Length: 203
Image 1 (tube, rainbow, N blue to C red):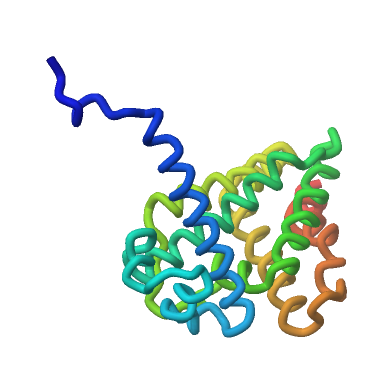
Image 2 (cartoon, rainbow, N blue to C red):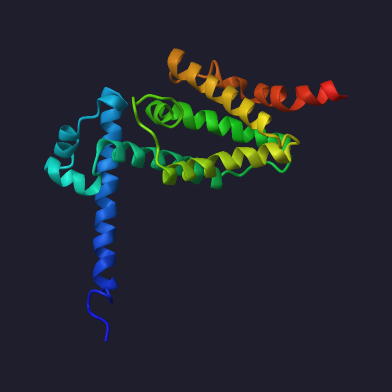
């Protein structure tokens, strides 16, 4: 006969898991607020605990270290990108779809600069995402790879070039004209550089 420990009461565990997940989400929301105000590297765990009405030692039950907090924020940021990409309604034409996907990515980046910094820049000294969080990032990158392949550029060089150009435009926009479109308006031209220019050279 199995012991009670071997047969967990899922009816009791599910509400507990929901409460824990809700508490984690609350902590993450507060962490992003502090990051927007003070910068990512300046997040204070003591102030974070105060913001969610919790003692700092209790915070460690949800995030055992500051690195674990950053890792959760990193994974959450890429999960948001994946979620938005899943809901995109792209044109059937693969070039037009790639352009729309690039425009969306730039809008995603400039909408939340501190998220862009954590996901795409070395903004927290010593922070390295976990393998699990990197898998979420790879899912997000997979969308761009598929869009490029459908548009006729399946090679890794095209993916690397596209990423570099997009991130460069987003960084320039955030640094030099927050809230504007001076740099991100060039999204469609990036597609010409990565897709159309090599085609013309082969013709």
